[in-house]
Length: 238
Image 1 (cartoon, rainbow, N blue to C red):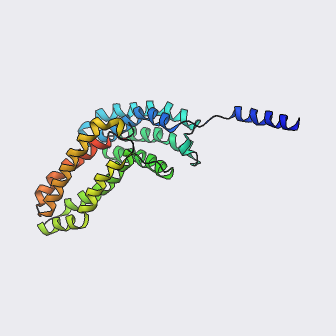
Image 2 (cartoon, rainbow, N blue to C red; image 1 turned 180 degrees about the horizontal axis):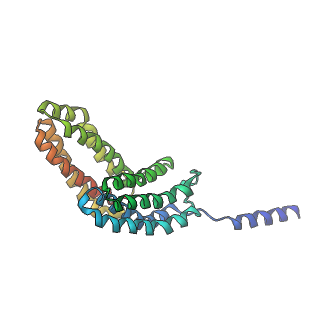
Image 3 (tube, rainbow, N blue to C red; image 1 turned 45 degrees about the vertical axis):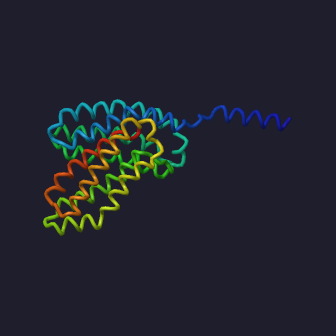
């Protein structure tokens, strides 16, 4: 009799629990709000796109709000170990509102900087949960890109450019190639494959200009490297 009662109690408790959501469902629901976030981030990188950015940020906030509300109460299985997941997944809404205020006051650069927090917030949670994704492989490359292009921009003499190549060239290309190791590129393969290949050619050309000490050419190609990166990064979390 005691065993029967115990089973009944356990059954009631289990029935009252909300099962954690599947990560695949979470990523599917993330596509639209994260796409609007990426658009917002890209558009705030140039002052001339400020008006378009306002619209994108509004859409980002409006789509992220119900997404966050849903998963704050239904934490995906891989994120179960993140105690403050509920507040973290809601955070992008506040970030979007802050970015919108900066845009309203005409500070496009500040809006862009504020929005960057979303990239690092999601990256941090995935890494802590041992999740490997194209988004974060692209984030890895972005960090390398900031360093390499920064040094390339300050190079004055051919010798300076060659030093940048010698110090960072192999690492830079490795970070690009590492995106091939992302396990979630199959769903965007049609767009990813040509974007990756074209981007690699661009990076090889950029690194070759550094190796040859062509300061002006390397600066010109820096813009092409950024464009190549954006094409791949925009495919993440889709």
